[in-house]
Image (cartoon, rainbow, N blue to C red; front, top):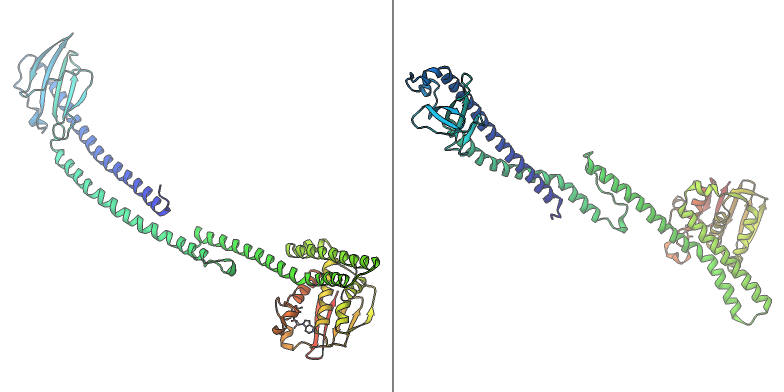
Length: 442
Ligand code: ADP
């Protein structure tokens, strides 16, 4: 019914409070009334005993009437003495304004259950003569009535006031307790996919709400991580797919330029097929790279013939080399085996070699040295300034942003990732406008 938790709490709180206060007032009044009845009953019994004591005088008509009203300080006291033989009831003695209630079943009885006129009656069977009954009665609330009345009035005024005051205090407490919830809602609402690095500020209260904030923040971290993984993956994909797609496109354009012999078509199709296969492998590896942690990748390591892989990569980049008229000078090519992930290592070599070609001056040599425990690729080109050296492995970092068509600043960050996964080391040695050398140590 009430959608708002605050209202619901307030309603439940008020209802409970109302019931408690009503119950409390009722109990006080009841206890007061019961106590009064007990006192009156005790007095009535005392009167009955007193009359029983002098019963002989009443039976033989020697009494001078009842004097218990003065003796016991009871107002409106009525006394009767009956004799009951089978169904016949005869009155032996009675005070003037007598009530004749012949109820022999119950000892005590209250007549007219009203505050003003209630009368308490005791019908007492004499122990001396079982046929004799002494009936004593008095008004129940005679003296107590004003006190009971004012207690009732006080309760009627005080209880609603207490009730209203408690609701007001309750309202303030509930509002105060829910204030941080509103704050949390506002902060969560202000977070969108562009600022997932934002976190909800802790209340420093160490309570359930603080725990909720911690949980929220934990969830945000996980969402941020998967978001950046997805982003990274799409960026890496677009960066890495360029090469194979360029090769496929080049081959197809070459094939379509003029009529070719069957053999030539076969050769083109074979290249396209090989490139599509490596494209597929590449996508799988990138997916693997973005979804797996280091341990998982390491568990999939094989022995890779590194020198052969290097030759493959060089072949793949032949057209780029030709375009810039760059020759490769292989200074050393040791037969080298490393433990690693074949496709990822290919990506690493490809990126390093392509950078060397991209940033080398035309007509210059690129030197490659593969030793047992290291590979060095050195080009003579634009070089890297000292202040840029520490940033070139950062994602999207490009020294010269105007040459944006040449890259996205991702290649070296992927290289670094692959180097880390393989627990290799990478060293850069460069002189601005002269040379750059990238050395991988296995
Ligand atoms: P990009 O896609 O821009 O090449 P990389 O992450 O591969 O991105 O490289 C980052 C930056 O490092 C490049 O923008 C370039 O300025 C510099 N760099 C990388 N390799 C070389 C190199 N062999 N010679 C000179 N500068 C290089």
